[in-house]
Length: 259
Ligand SMILES: Nc1ncnc2c1ncn2[C@@H]1O[C@H](COP(=O)(O)OP(=O)(O)OP(=O)(O)O)[C@@H](O)[C@H]1O
Ligand SMILES: [Mg+2]
Image (cartoon, rainbow, N blue to C red; front, side, top):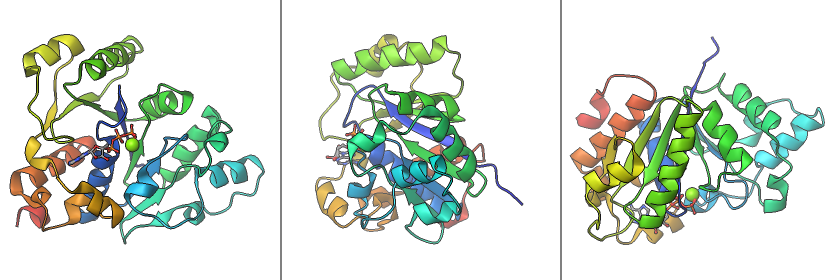
């Protein structure tokens, strides 16, 4: 039977706030839950997924788009990197100039193709509100919108969130990321909520901060799958499972992780 995978977009109002780390961790959680998941790197100008997971060179979303446009497309499996038995990755373009050739029509076709083969598709976007980001947000069943207590980030996020509200985008969840750097927040949760005019749905706590994260990035590891890391701490891991299950609309229960 064909699947009808849920599309989850990871977005933000500022760069470098932890979108790709969250997207890859969710991918790791889905793989532990034995759900078929695809991570699409939709940052078409300089996507970071291939770097973060240290992927070998291979086909990209540009080759897929080019083959669709030229009627050469046959097998969707040819374009994805198999990270493990459950999770695959569709890497972003190698050259940012290729990104501009991927239009909105192609992006919706790509989503339609892959949602038949996966339980969940995670779309990692860029904070720049370019077409690929806007289309991804539009097509997503759920949006995880990362914010930090950075003033510029709060202002940009507030603007983008109000645009999403204006276009009546449903299922937008705000995630306050307190784990991307090891400092205390300057603003209170109350201040941030007032600026954002949106509830804060999840908070990634500072305990998820990894001091030597670059070591794991160089090794291409998904943090949540490394049992030696503090990510393995019960509450942090449970939070990521909760987010992952909420996004596919299932109960927050899983034996594999809680055992
Ligand atoms: N849990 C963490 N622990 C330590 N550092 C982190 C953590 N999460 C994120 N960072 C730091 O923040 C940087 C940016 O993270 P990431 O690449 O996920 O952000 P992004 O929002 O995807 O950025 P971009 O806008 O460039 O795509 C990482 O390279 C790392 O230095
Ligand atoms: Mg990124």
